[in-house]
Length: 206
Figure 1 (cartoon, rainbow, N blue to C red):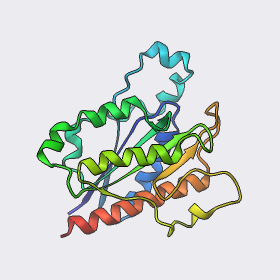
Figure 2: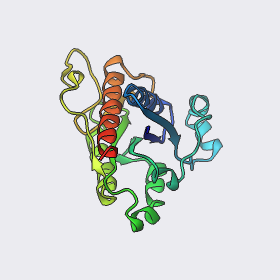
Figure 3: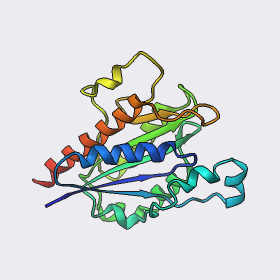
């Protein structure tokens, strides 16, 4: 019996998508794990995305299917990612969260392990507040919050600037979005994916 992990994200310039791929890679390293990557619906018009200079970046993950609330119900573990908007998740991911009321009414997500990941433009641009604010969605659904324990040695890396915290993996994109995820940031994401899949497998076996 396989363990199903779903990684659901909103990304504008591709940084969150790259983390999603790293999380999926980590989850797939756990034997018997099946991973699906999904993105939430984009609400910005194409002309606005073009003015923001994100058209080309979004082509890199245009092939990723759009998530529906029903996709969450059959998952054994969930991971949600977003860029930060003034210290909380993007409106696109928030809209997806808001659409899960039917699942909440049924208690469909109670007991599922879940975690979050993020991208910010600057080192102190809301990494931790965005992650923690997304935790409230998990808790309202009765999910089991999975973070990144300090068994991930990359969390203590001090040689250069890096995203990621005990609350979830993260990337610092730079104010202009030009900085790509570092090896350290991707390693933290892979650890989080593997850790989530391991917990999901243990819970699913009970």
